[in-house]
Amino acid sequence: MKNITRKIVVLSILLAMCVALSVIDSLISGAIISILPNIRLGISNIIILIVLYQYGFKEGLVLSVMKSIIVGLLINGPVAFLIGGLASVLSVVGMYLVKKSLDKYLSIVSVSFVGGLIHILIQLLVVSLIYKMYENVLMYGVYLVLISIITSIIIGVVSFYVNRTIDKNDLLKKEKSKSSI
Image (cartoon, rainbow, N blue to C red; front, side):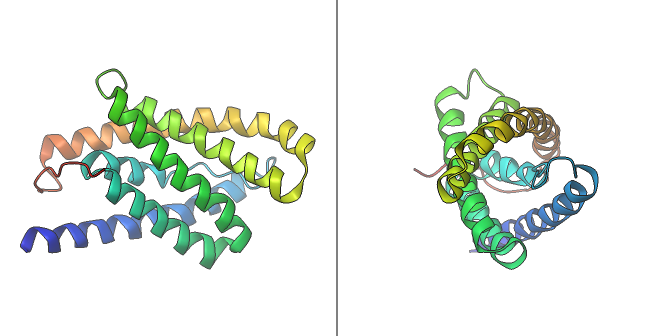
């Protein structure tokens, strides 16, 4: 029972960090990258990747859904929630599948790259379907995909070092759970 309580507390703290990083990301993105509106760097994905690697798929997916609900509905609004939430969930599923099937060959940086690519492509697809602006989304999407590739690699590198530090110092002090599904 003690381990379950500890896991819930740690995951709750990680969720709070994830939400805080999403808010900070919105502020940074709005201030620095005003040339391309609605761009996010995705720094909260560091936490999602860490949870995916440290706890497994189920926990990573739940964290992603909870973050999407909190940030999407309370801060960004229902349309952004639909666009970002769907992309986040499918991104976590994609990262998990790549991690599970190619774990021996790919690093967390590669998994982050795949997750970022899935995320932006799903967002572009949903936006084009909702607003029926296919050509505009395609033209604008090229820039978004390029930026997403760069930020996903950076997020992956940061996640690699954070994950390595957690493992080296046993910071989560938990029993390694077998990934669900």
